[in-house]
Image (tube, rainbow over all chains, first blue to last red; front, top):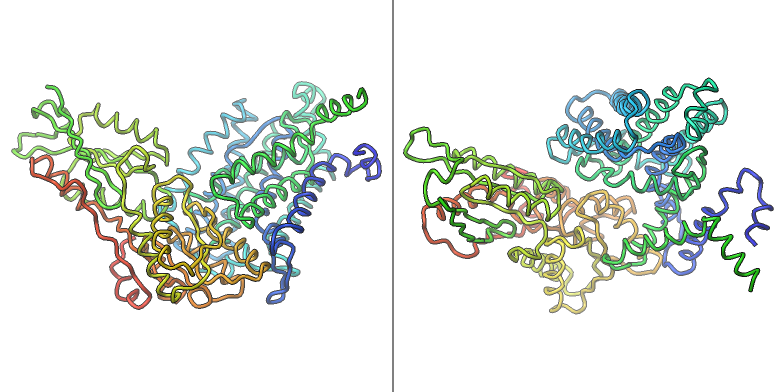
Length: 335
Length: 300
């Protein structure tokens, strides 16, 4: 049935079918059984409801997953994204509260710094040939320490209406982070599909040596992917700090790397690289956040939360496995 | 030369254990300062849970500054929220022949029971009074399995046993952080709105989660502190600021400035003076009316 269904879809959407079915199933379940989930009202000129919360809360994972998708497509991985989120929050808060430089300058400086942090990963992986897990683990561990040092172990509260607009404001009736994700998605698609860059990334992920002999510079390609991920993480960090109007270096972005990698994988980008699906990663991020919100709204006892989450993710991953589907079809045919 | 290890295991306050490692002779304590002075420098190991909240930072600061004031050689170890790290740290302290160990336990199981229950009880009693014995409460729990989370939940539920019309309608973990506290409260508010139930009050296991919940309530177009009563535990400075702004109704203080009391106990043990098995720093309850007078004295 699924084969027939997928032939009805445009070719570009075909790989997305399983993540989309999973998301639709989650939304349907909630719409039917979770009180207040589907309710959307207009409050002060913008939409308000659980679905809007899901969009807003998943924006961080979505932003970072854009960069992570490219990194994973080069057959790499970036574990440092959560730490970069924490650094971005601390730096932005420090610049605004303690240095009192203007908001645009503070945001530009923070983004620039995160780009540099990403480039550091890119240098280790691309130029020095350090394995991606090891290279980014360094920043993952050290980065949170740096963020805590910057914040002096305290939570820095930021009282700035401009800063709180980033996560709390609205544009076209939707939370502002949604606009940021849309713009970054457009930029990423334009860079990777509008130019040959996407092809280069896939080539490096498929076979680095072959790509090199074909005239692709794997170092530059990797540098781009990691630096871009640094930038995305920085933006996510700014959103996270803006959301609670404070920089919490101990908890901002904690375990974010795991959610992001999961979103990318659920979205259909294989961990061994060679191809990527940006839209799939965003759907993956939406699935994860919908799941989290579902658990919170349905009052699943705290002790069961992680198990419930794991079971749903397992089911989604199994549904995506072509081997398992083939096995089931064969059994049905022979029966 | 053999070290006699005295496990005094004094639960100081809700959060500290003190273990004195006593040496038979001065030279056994290899870390002593000496330098010919009569009074030897004592060395104390402090094993902290981590730095998950402002409260912990304040506790660490208090221990550190008190050690500096008394000229104690302090060895600090951060367990990063893991019990196994803490066990390793204790082993290392004993190997380094410290005179005493101060311990802020990660998990309750295996260590001394603490007095977080009393805090939960105080918050529950206060809230039941404020609600005139009737209302719907949502609870923001701390990190699952952590002693403060388990006991603050237990104490709160115990207090509510006498007030059957005060019901806990939802309870989820906000992991002691502002961001998660806000996220969970957003979900609670939408669920309640859709189901037609009214949330009368929020009980948060720490101030940071309450501060997050306050933002969620405001974004829902409601007035925290008026439309929804907010009560939490810890008594950190931002909580007093929120009380001054009328957004937080009450916080139960669990005083992190344990340094002086901890070192009094250390010196008592080392001098061979008797020490009560358990010394508890009194927790207090602060309402909006006193916030203005108290905020100036807040160090954390």
